[in-house]
Every structure is written in C-alpha cells, then in structure tokens.
Image 1 (cartoon, one colour):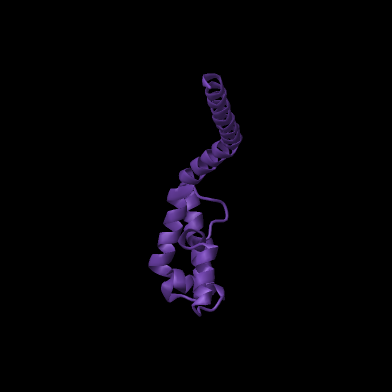
Image 2 (tube, one colour):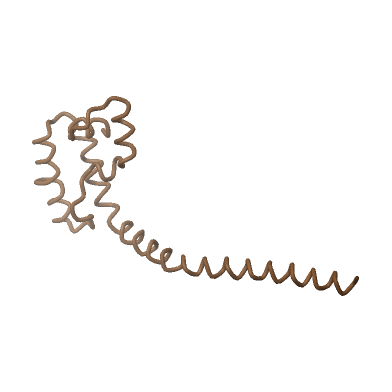
Length: 125
C-alpha cells in the first residue's frame, strides 16, 4: 500500500515536472519575440518627441484649414523644421499615426463619420 502510494506520488510529481518543463520551453521560445519587441519600443521611444511635436502642432493649428493646407503645413513646414532642428522623428510620420489607430477609425465610421481623410482628421482633432 505504501509502495503504491509512493508510485502514485512519483507519477504525479513527474507529470508536474513535465508540465513545468513544457512551460519553460514554451516561454524560452517567446524570449526572441520579447527581445525584438523591446528593441522596437526603444526605437519608437527615441523618436517619440518629434512624432508628438508634429501631432500636437496638427491638433493645435490645423483644424481651421482644408486638406491641401493641412498637408502643406505638415509636409512643407513642420516636418522639415523638426528635421532641421535634428529632433528624432519617425520617417513618414503622419499626425493621424499618433492620434488614432485603425480600430478607432472603424468605430468612427460605424458611428456615421465619413471615411474621407478630412473627416477622419477632424474626428481626431
């Protein structure tokens, strides 16, 4: 009886050890993905100041203008100024990249906001 109990306990312990081993091996595979994500977050963090400057300028000043003038402000004035001042900036950044994401745009569309760029920009502002 003690022998059977000991064998059952050993089997139970072995199953737990096997599960723990599977868990550790599974998490080890995630290590590369986590390290890649950390590296990407570091790059994004370095460029955050310039990205936020462009987005905040857009929110503060672009609301009164049409699409042509908004694009002119962003592409011809603000982004070149940030670059000239050597403030790190994500290449090709657009204000909407900082102000909303695809799911937010879809939600606005479901609520009746037109899908044209000007309407989406107005929604973000």
